[in-house]
Amino acid sequence: MTQKTVYDHWRASGLSRRDFMKFCGTLAGLMGLEAAPPLMAFGAPPGPSPAGLVAEALASKPLLPVIWLELQDCAGCTEAISRSQSPSLVNLVLNSIAVNYHETLMAAAGFQAESAMTETMAKFKGQYLLVVEGSPSSGADGAYCMVAGRSSLDILGEAAAGAAAVIATGNCAAFGGLPAARPNPTGACGVSEVVKDRPVVNIPGCPAIPEVTTGTIAHFLVLGALPKTDALKRPVTFYGHTIHDHCLRRPFYEAGKFAGSFDGPGARAGECLYKLGCKGPTTYNACSSLKWMQGLSFPVQSGHPCLGCSEPRFWDGGGFYQGQSAPLLTPTAAAAGLAAGIGAAAGAALAAANGAKKRRAGKAVASPRQGSSD
Ligand code: SF4
Ligand code: F3S
View (cartoon, rainbow, N blue to C red):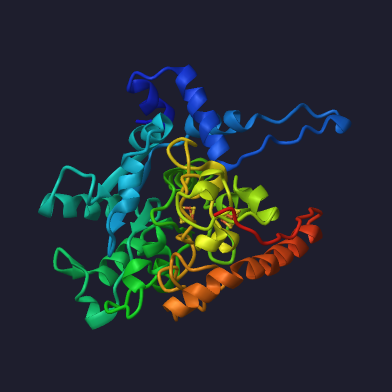
């Protein structure tokens, strides 16, 4: 008997072809797929549209088996995905992939749950996708993080060994996150520090943006490979720019207008939150372009500085509300005051550095001046 494809499952659940095509268009956008350039000069017909490429793949591929592990974490990334307002995401999770094991979302528990994982690993060896949320613990022989009597290192090692690829979602899985904050009592670390023989992609964030996690899963489902990544194993489609690059408060930064207090007139007028500790200039993530809750908003738009939650060791990188120039790893009140005072100067240096980088790429960015309305 031929295996049912993703599209077969889609139709069997009562959804229309029109919805399917809309879904494929959304997926193509999420994955950053671009239309193949037509080679008209050579008389070739235009290539298929991005949505067409996705549709073609989903109409020929079977469901993608997924094992989703929770290690040392708060389950915030799962919370973010399960509460996502985007119907396309729900469709993706429920219809286009098969989550065979997810400790938080699955109805089964105990032995029944564990056997679902064992069966998936045996039946789909070398084919399933492993998604890891939370950091493995290497301290005290793994005793700090045990599930069903086994250490997280053991479980991760076994699940990764049979996986086609691994997605580390959230800052904890990508870089250790909160569990790895000083003094890191459990020996928490990123998944890629222990999984060395499988392709690993990091989707950092606290939590990770749901569309980024599912967009990466979709990339694997459709193209059979993980997306292109940067030096920190993050997909460049989503982590190729800083929060600062697309920030809606950026014109105020360039004009030297910095909010001096939370919810003051300056912050409400849209002034830059740099002096209030914004780490946007050094934080790579898609929040300011993709945003959250179906493009509704993101922290900086809501009046809160970017904490740098998608960067390694962001819990230890100076106080959240200290200026960008606060000395790393020595957060003190004095440093906070100093940082607030000289933050804009550091911002100028950062902007100059960013500007040089962008000019090399053919773009120009102006340097900021200092100032504050409140
Ligand atoms: Fe936006 Fe922060 Fe950059 Fe200011 S410093 S423009 S608030 S990202
Ligand atoms: Fe995190 Fe900054 Fe986005 S704090 S959620 S990377 S705006």
